[in-house]
Length: 312
Image 1 (tube, rainbow, N blue to C red):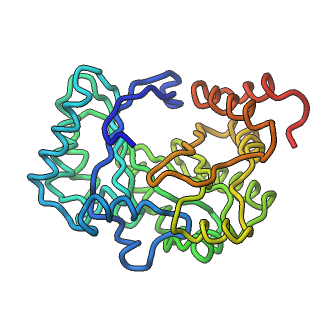
Image 2: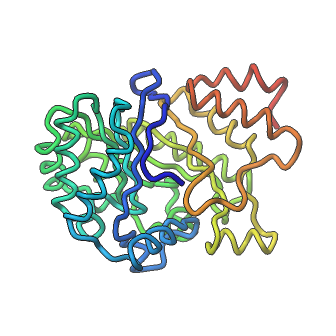
């Protein structure tokens, strides 16, 4: 997988396609994983362990060199947004050096075409002090922080997915961000292994409703896929779990698209998935085409056009 590239993605907040610089930054790895073994569906730790000598935190000068090398690969492509994935929390000083965090924000502030940066974090790292530092560093450019809520249901989020986050922590992070003018992005997980297909649909719909009620600016529906050496992988090999159906994804979008911007997350990641969402029949091709068109437009009508009759 390329670690630095520019692609084109529909921005539902601007209601247009924008050029996005995607950067995979080799942070020291998720603190939650190091403490507890991490979330049951996540395999990002395998990549961070691989590229950071077992979860080592590189010094700032190495991050600075890496960042500028990564930028050299996309220079001249005039991206409007920078999205950073580091397999953990960008806001955590134990995963990304504080000086590196602020240096990247300052880079965005002074870049001619970049107008916004999106970073990911666990909710507990979004403090008023951290947000104040970020806003000073980024100037008049936009900052968006993505939090993995996964489910508004405490049992699903913490007992099933082992997220280790209370709903109050999430709500506090959202409140702090909104009060500071920081945009909030929430990940909602579709099909935890403790839910059947219909329960998973209902859980995702209810969680998306909750997110918009709390003031989240946009949601990404993270559809389960199977990565090696995870609990989901073990259950899948035993025939006890399958990723969600593509039709289930469509049902969630149709039920929530009127509430606010709902993205459909990618079905590819690092390490590469072994199994992805599927209807397990010949309808996959037309569903995937419809999902692709939705990602490019956020218009749920594409499902009506491409999939005749009721969606089962």
